[in-house]
Length: 612
Image 1 (tube, rainbow, N blue to C red):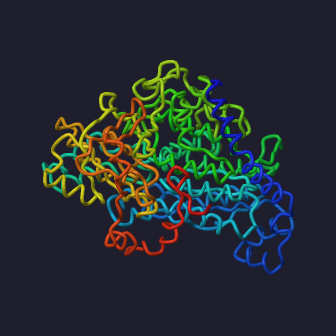
Image 2: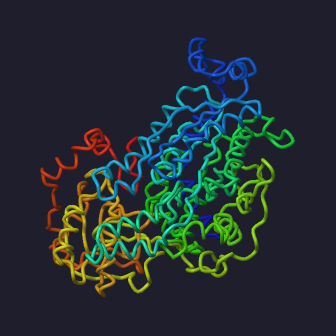
Image 3: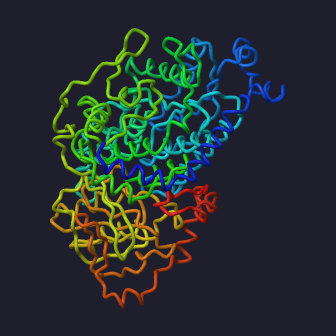
């Protein structure tokens, strides 16, 4: 291991000692008590088993066989989640074949950020993560389960399921992916049409045709955004069946991987029937996810140029396991982690090409060999993290694994740790008199890492888009969009701003975005200092910037500065959200229901948690 990685891990361990100790004590107390079905009243148990076949009732009540709770994010509006419709039947059959049972414990909401981008619904997106965590808790609160399978893929859904599962840390858990859609219109071509539309060069018909050719079938979107970053991180944490992330929904291997997830979760629940040679073990998720596992996830994110959303989500995930991390930890790890992958928007390849080149297994193998990942961690696979460096294949009705080729299948997509695309990871921490922010630099050319230009200040993305349409931004400019934090309006992604900013940049202007909102896992080549914390509504210094102020966004030296005389800066008041904007942010399309979350949410750097 690199000494620096060990130092960051130890710093996290020391910082988290008290909260982690308390968390593990709660797990131990829950593990030590009688299992739910054995201790609850007969009426309670009868309710829980009323709809089951007689043989399943017998297994739960008399034979005390394990019962798997399935929490699913199925709906048929999300392409990534539509394949889950048939998974419960596969899971129930597999469990019965191993002498156990399975029940769908509950469903959780699953919204699509691609549908809500630039719409009021996006203001519910971040908070949907905690709603999903609570939905997971409600599903598992029936307390009749010995293990859990979590079915989810996309942006807030996996973090929400994982947060919820960690609050049931006494249960063994396995995540079950469904895989990406096949490749459609290349992402670079889609982006080109978006920019042409922003400039008025093509119409809505051409734009829709391009989008529909890109998003065209069941499965996850094929760019390396938050959804696919989720899958990379779950592999790095050892919470999947090894190699399961990017196998297509319609592939023959998909069902075999789902059956294997059933076997693994039962083996981790101590059910010897499911373990090779009867060598079962008890591995609850709260014990599996420790400081080293969290560091492995952070390193995997940095090494692949993954989604900026995870600088919020994985802080919340870690807190759910009693572990405290912050953006300084991410920054320190980024300096120590080589960038070994280029997948759109950090390159031209999509996730199918990434998988063909070696996928998560290649990344994990290289990071272990390069001393960047803890290889000695628990995983749901008995062989540990080394199992996640192999490739799954069908072997009749079962899954077998093969070793990866020594070399990358495509050097433009994946490279060894000895010859990376960059010696450092894909994210930068920026600090200065405007606050703390993060920037995804893996997709930004190095000659754009520093932008110094006058500010154009907006209170909403709509105002910015109107100014662009009026050609008021046809110049070197740092676009500042404020009042976009979790307290103000739920911290929506501002991905709709990417095409116009990209179009300005292609016209030769020096352009950057600074905001207390989010961008997206699909953030492109425009430098963007995002998640500025504290947010303006909480008194953040971003609220002191005025139109025309010179702003320096410097990812080389990690600085975000308003180049304003210090005395004048000190004397300025922070801008206030207008009453009209506050009313607009809190009403219509369900936003009223999330007022309590807006009031209580922590900062972005604290994971935007609403439950602490």
